[in-house]
Amino acid sequence: MKRVFHAVLVATIAAGCSGEPVVPGAALESITAEDIAPRIAALASDEFAGRAPSSEGETRTLAYLRDEFSRLGLEPGNDTSYFQEVPLIKSTVTPGPALVISGNGQTARFAYADDFVGVTRRVVDETGLDNSELVFVGYGIVAPEYDWNDYAGIDAQGKTVVVLVNDPGFATQDTALFRGNAMTYYGRWTYKYEEAARQGADGVLIVHETAPAAYGWDVVRNGWTGPQFMLETPDGNMSRTAVEGWISHETARSIFASGGHDYESLKGGAATPGFTAVPLDVTASVRLENTIERSRSYNVLARVPGTDRADEYVVYMAHWDHLGTDPLIAGDGIYNGARDNATGTAALLELAEAFQALSTRPSRSVLFLATTAEEQGLLGSQHYALNPVVPLDHTVAALNMDSMNSFGPTRDITVVGYGNSELDDFAQRAADEQGRYLRPDAEPEKGFYYRSDHFSFAKLGVPALYLDPGVEAVDGGEAYGREQLDAYTANRYHQPTDEMDDTWNLSGMAEDVRLFFRIGYRLANTGAFPNWREGTEFRAARDAMMGQGR
Image (spheres, rainbow, N blue to C red):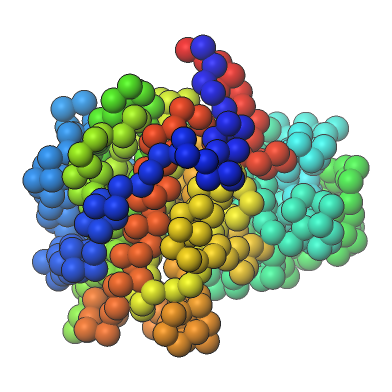
């Protein structure tokens, strides 16, 4: 049968009526900073060597998480095992392949790293483009809910498409176009590659511009040159395009001009409804030679079984991995990842302990999922979502914890992707009970919602909630809170300096974990399934999934 959808529950949450599950005070009181601190300290210790996937640090991390879940009395989450194997591929392109553009009797070469970067997700030793026709397809978007199709009227089969980053809403700042300044998934670079593959293209070149990408060319160059991690599919990823790459803004202008086109004019037209793809009258050639290495990593799963709706699950998640150790760094080369994401993993354990301690188990089951290889591109969560232990139409919601508060209590909590789903209603109720308020992400144009593990669930239709620390500190106000967050980003984020120290105040993190408990407890004790808001890019997938019934 079809599951009960969201309407009844939303009304209940809004009204706060007496039939709503009462969150047990004893469980909330069991969540303390004193419990959380030693868990962070253990995971972020030098002994765990930065928790890199497929390393000795992983071996120690897996053993620690398995032993903690077992000690707390949770059942293995993957049948009789606490682990789910994640096959990883590390592919390294031999540096130096030039992008060669030919047309109108002229040939131009664009340098690897400075003008162009390119990789292949195909598990092959060599691939590339050979005089592949270039076609400008605007933003490369096919979005029925926005009545938008950049591939209409063009056959991309065997061609290389050139696309713009972000989406037309950002380009125009028109709130009636997509979601205005706030990036949709259609604006994210990962979508551009996925859609081009669905259209049968041989290659994809995304034009980089700093404002719509939200980062400079140096981020692209550093991130796309060197080893690339990916998952291996049964077909060896041959369904992906042969080449996935970026070109600089200057390179794009030059390529367009070589075919007799003005880049800025075509770019402007691409943001208007009814845009039609434009052949660029030039071809592209490049050869990519790869070194392929295979390894295994593991997600960790544990569960608290439910009672009368035990086959339906609420998922809490946090990534256990970080960046490992860099032997080239003099002195301390360990990327301990204390905040990113020993905090979230410690919170996962704290929540597991609170649920396990309940005198009465919840109606639905609760799955605790510690994922691997988030730092390599959300790979562990992606593997789980494609190979779920719990069917996605039985998955009520995913609640993600990544880089939590280390500077004390706040009056607010940040909802990244605020307005996406009815999970906001649960977060609002939980915040109200704590005398706090929800703060939308301050920079929605940067697409942070698409950069953490919950998104692997969201893109397949499962409602997913991602909360960041609040900003308005109880002691010190908003100025102090922003100072702490900015200092972390500037001085510790993805650095060996991301270590736990005596300045940390985890009382705010404990309060945030209690908020997560309130949300998950209510989700686990209702019969309804929350959904995405109307018009979001994930609504159709969820509606189709739930309409199939069982």
